[in-house]
Length: 98
Image 1: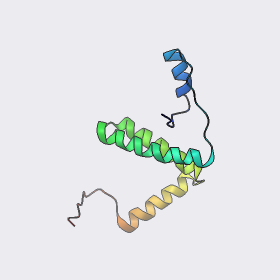
Image 2: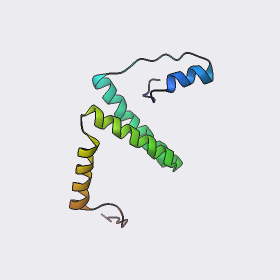
Image 3: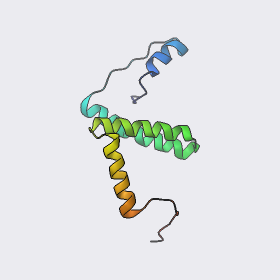
C-alpha cells in the first residue's frame, strides 16, 4: 500500500523499527493526487478520533496543497475572509432542514 507520509517518517522507521522502508519521492501530479488522498485520510481520522492532533495533520496537508498550487497562506486567508464576509462562518451552528 502506498501513502503519503510526513518527511521524517522514513528515518523514524529506521531508528525505531530497525528496518529500511521502501519509498520514493513523488513529484508533480503524483504528489498532488496523494495530497488529495491524504486530506481525506486526515479528515476521516479526525472524525473517528475527535483528536485535535488530527486537525493539525489536516492543516499541514492543506498547507502542502497551497504550496503545490502556488497559493500563499496570505492569499488563502484573503479567500477565507472573503467567504466569511459574504456567507458567514459556522459559529451559530445553523442546520438547514432541506
